[in-house]
Image (cartoon, rainbow, N blue to C red; front, side):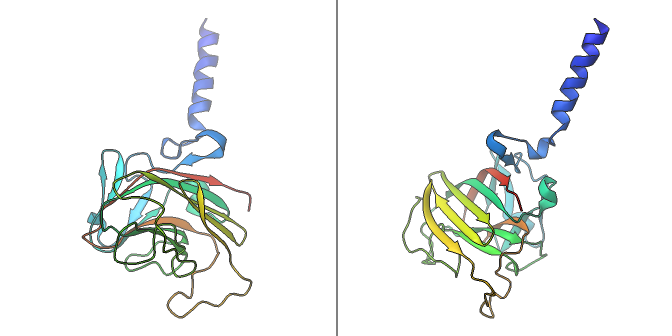
Length: 214
């Protein structure tokens, strides 16, 4: 009987130790990178713009960026699928950065921004690959949860809103960016959520990533 208990205990330990609780493995290779707390996320200036409310990340306040800083892929992703459930309040603006890196303050220099904006005065709507492939159409509504999905494989970027493809972009070889976005390039890096302004309120939950082969 004691031997059986030892085997069961060992099996439970192996299963529970495979993936940290802060990066729980879901089905089909998806990994949760948000556990309902700020564990494994890092923010510099204006940290008060990010808080936890009812198990979601609430974004509301002066310009700031919340960077994933956790153990999955040592927070360096090149090829991946990413998805999050998002809800905007009227007039809100935010964004999801990928292939970026931590900055103490300011707009991230590295990486691409995927727009979160269903009714803000900025005409670039949710799903835009900001300043690269901009969308005027609105595919999601304020005060409703929707899914924002990003896939990067090689130089190819796919963005979906509620399973609808809204951006299909391939970064050209030897691309040269304008002076205001010199590092908006496919390089690899982490994710960041944007606080845009004190009047914008946005919620994020069910933040998931599926690493793909590099």
